[in-house]
Image (cartoon, rainbow over all chains, first blue to last red; front, side, top):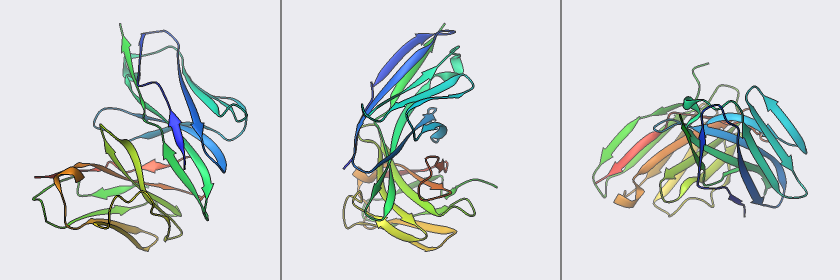
Length: 112
Length: 114
């Protein structure tokens, strides 16, 4: 099966940079993606990595090291609206399909 | 496109009743996922379909849960009989390809079983 680990909670101040780590264990790894979810809302896609390295999308960047089974989401110039839960998700090839499994989520609190 | 559409948005039902949750994926998407979200267990993958065919239902908690996808534009998740521990938010998501790393979620159905 698949397992993913993330910190449960991270706190940072407005304007700062924060990194949310994710380690995973899976066979048939295809890629790692990141989602944001505000309270009462649905998860929305932020970024993905299929290959090693850094992907940048505006204030958000995501990194992957396949050899270390590790990735992170980097949020820069934090804003109050970034307070939300962030999930890493692994897509892995299993028995005829590509399964998308989510981590337990990291709650980010941005303070003034 | 209107995105992934789920109905109903909220459902309150009595224990023992049958509950049916509905999902319309984004047109042209060929992967569909059903997730359940609770505070205790996070986002659990229940079942997923590729090209309308169920691929992996190992996350379905019990025989009381069943899911179907009769065509590319519609899927249902049924719970019969429902129990209070089934109370959760149920999300449907779709992706454009079976190997896509980007999934689009519906707004979810908040189910309360009393």
